[in-house]
Length: 207
Image 1 (cartoon, one colour):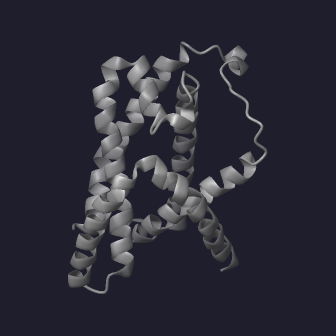
Image 2 (image 1 turned 45 degrees about the horizontal axis):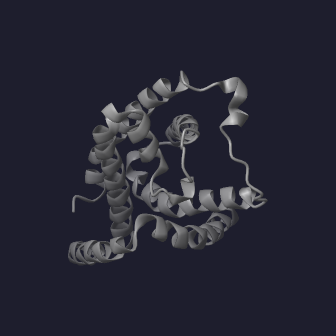
């Protein structure tokens, strides 16, 4: 209900905690990996659609990201500031992706059977951090949800009354849809939103 101001304040607290925790876990994980023999950790599949999957994953996330970026326009004052923030964010995301990838190399079961593989690895390898990581994951889901929800409401609401009504409908709908299950939702929405995201990216480049 505090709109984008609440989103920014929540992210200022939770996102740095998540980044610091992942970096610590990553450093602890590095010492147990033989980087000269990474092939020993990999399971190779006969899947020629990896490039398409990567493109769909990027476009899927663009659907979630762009509405948030639109609502942040009042916080960014210049193109130079936008470029700097984009560069720093890209570097951080790449580093965190590498950390998570190296964590996933330690999965000792069929990764497709896990709802959240990274959580599984942390709970198995770093039992001391298991509860803490659980709270951090909940915080991450929380910040993602409120960011997307607040951005959607701010972009479609005509006034404060409609904002409140739509927020209530959104929360009730989320409770109902959550019964489907996280992995089931992702399996259904990921390819659908991925192709829709490609249309969005195409329109952006065209304009």
